[in-house]
Amino acid sequence: MATYEQIFDKNRAWVEKMKGTDPDFFEKLAADQQPDYLYIGCSDSRVPANEIMGLEPGELFVHRNIANLVNNSDLNVMSVILYAVVHLKVKHIIVCGHYNCGGVKAAMEPKDMGLLNPWLRNIRDVYRLHHDELNAIKNQQARYDRLVELNVLEQATNVIKTAAVQKCYLATGFPIVHGWVFDLHTGILKDLEINFVKILKDIQEIYDLTSTRSEFGEGSSDGNNI
Ligand code: CO
Image 1: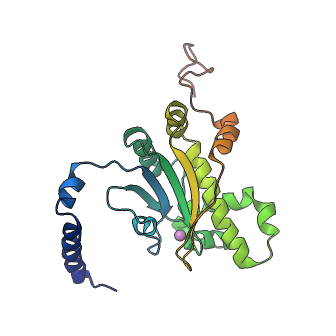
Image 2: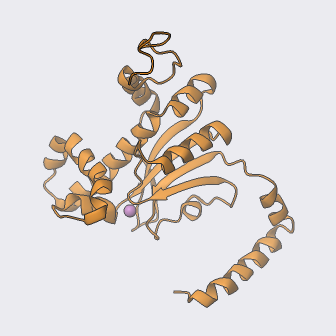
């Protein structure tokens, strides 16, 4: 474990290493970013996004929070998705969870977690949505692993519910949304192979945001009433 002072020595060593592989590395880095991928993952220190994907600085736009949640009233994650889709024009959005996620585990325990309650509530809601499947799993660890996967599925679905993703996909065929789980025991990334097109089609029955016109109130005197 590095001490606070050692961090700066490590930074200098990293700078030299990067210059050693490409003398212009930092000039190129400062010029622009054109990442093809947006990664939404857990804040857990054991899941470093760039490293596990083998990507260099500039190749991955990243958002991390406890238990990789995509909450529609979270201005942070919603801004990241909008910026990544509309301005960076990323081709792929990845929601990546991980087994042994402390946030998911906490949500499985019947306990008051204080300020974390509203955040973890999102995971408890995932449990409620998939109650029958989860309760049929008798092994506690297997149920925990499955909730990690179902949480990824639901958060990826939340990404697909956004207007930015729906409109951009309709216009360009991108971005594609993926769900992954990282296994801390093996280091392997597992693609849950969620069916992006099917989820998009299914949710658009209710969450279709591709039209700018509204059948409610447009041009009428009731237009300002929500
Ligand atoms: Co976690």
